[in-house]
Length: 273
Image (cartoon, rainbow, N blue to C red; front, side):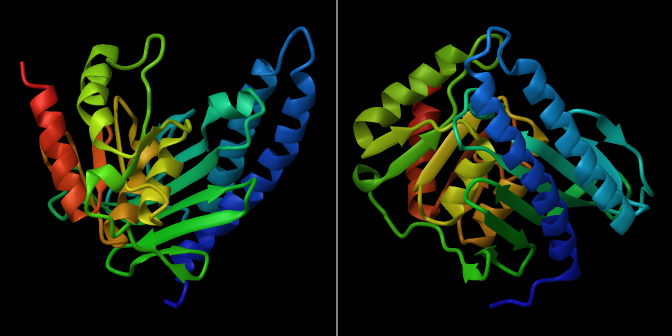
């Protein structure tokens, strides 16, 4: 096992602190399902409270780093230092409906040497509070689930592959694009799953639970940690055009080498004008 660095320890401590509160709040949400008002307002407060917990913990540990937060937006730090990218509750709709499949995603991204923007993600962590699973990775140090090394699936045939995706919904995403890809991939693969958390989907690709993943119209906080996990587990993450970006969010296709190549080609054919 690789020695856990101070950076990962800082990230995991913050995630576990926020995760404990989310577990308690999730218990409340399950009770609120029977109320007339419903749990929406409560979940919004839980989301913001988790983000604040993570922010405070990371700010204390790295006071000169900036932040990119799902709820609070950008918080500037020292331009020469990394920044944190945080999703305090990925899978909010699951949480809202009492479905125990959601995660906290934290990533650290370094600035480009020339100061022209943001470069590689150097560390990432996806923590699933309900199962108490901590998926983490550091650049050039591999991907791990707790103390177990992660590797992407070794399957080579689409006919054996279980592929994850995210389905567009009202006001979010291109449903026509998604259905064209689904029509192309569906007959070729063993199954397609939509579980509702892109961060966990990517972590599960890194761990070989899924063989591949695709989705579009995401945000950096959805994918920053997950992209690093897949790459450090020996997989590939690109956009639909095959570009390997530091963070693939507008379009994401992930998998091991042979499956990523096949998925990418099928998607490109499906999306030709």
